[in-house]
Amino acid sequence: MLASKATTAPLEFGTLNHVILPNTSSSLIPQPQTPWNVRARHDFFAHYVFGLSSSYNILPSLYEKAKADDHLSASVDAASLAFAANKNPVESRELFRLAAQQYMIALRRVNAALSNPELSSADSTLQSVLLLDLYEKIMGRDLRAAAPWLAHLNGALALIQARGYNDMIRSEISRTLANKLFITLLISCYIASHRIPEGVAELGRRLDIYHDKDDAKWRLSKMNQRMINFRIDVAEGKLSDGEIVATAKDLHDAYREIEDTVSQRWQPRKVMASEEDPAYRALIFRDYYHVYRDHFTAQVRNTVRIMQLQLQSYIQTHLEDDGSDEVSNTLAESWSRTERFAEDVCAAVPPFILPAARPNNSVPFSSIQTLKCGILLPALFIAGSASRNPELRAWAIRTLRYMAASGDIRSASMTADMLEKNPGMDFRYMYARLGGYAFTS
Image (cartoon, rainbow, N blue to C red; front, side, top):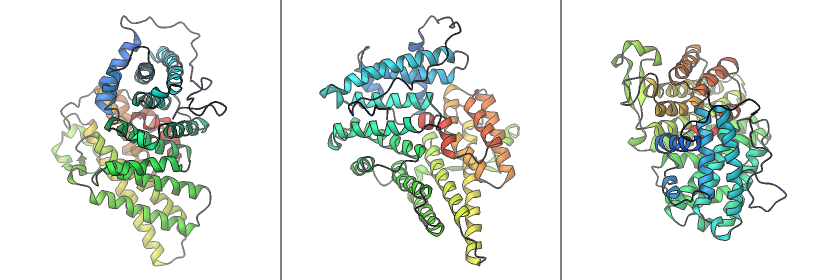
């Protein structure tokens, strides 16, 4: 999770030489009456922990028991200040400085906790590690150097080995943290183009028995292991074109099976555009949109579409055209799937931006609405870049611009720019630039 020094003990997390420290040569803005760390902490819990995230639900109970000068409190403040800096462009210079300062304090305290036999196996320590990883996802968004991403992976594996698999799943709180760790490590492997280590795979196997068959997110995460290793096999030249196409088809079928067998809670309700205010008709692609149970469900379904769109790209790129009807039909079917997945992504957008689609929607966007819009950006980018329909890409760009203007969402403006100027950008780079999993549910 956190960068670990290769020359130090395996449980020392974090180095201070790669901390992002902004230029602070100019004079600082006046300190508000309420200290920034207090304001940032309140905003982080109110909007991120209780509003957006579905994976930090046990943080409040752990934080209640934390001391003001311990590793968890410092880690909460580091993540909170980074979160606040991302939301407040006017004050971001000072907030980035304070966040980096707090991050260094938190690193020292986490390392001290890891050297303590009792604290090293405490849930609060693993939660601290996850919070500092969240900080780094928010603050460091450059994939040109993959070393920090791989260092996070190595540090997390060391923590797993130190605690032991049985200890990692000893209680509901421990399992919740282990689940978060497992999914976070998968994302790090994906972004860094790194094969899934056996230690991560084993953690997933140990957690399997605690998930029922209708847990679509867990089934998706386990499928993503196969997808990540497949991408590595392709990148390393281990598969022929025929093998790439065959494997991509198998993975497509496996993802489809997940969607076909989940319960009704994962299915959307279809709303016709004719039911909406004509003033907002341009925010609906085609003549309908989909309403999911919540933003988490929409995100899970869109994650499947992201993977499916990448699989169709593999088929379209590596299918050897021998002029046969079979190849022509396979290619046509793949392009048809691409358009269907891209349109499904577009159909998931309106409930987040139409004023009347949800009770708390507004224009300008509320703080929670703005955060929830962030989960749509990766899927909108890949849908707009994969589709051959110029109307769909144009709609995606216009909608992203609308989000940016209505919610002051800089990342939406950035996504629109990338889709407009560089639609062929590697999805990993785009995802990292948006902060990775930091702004997902």
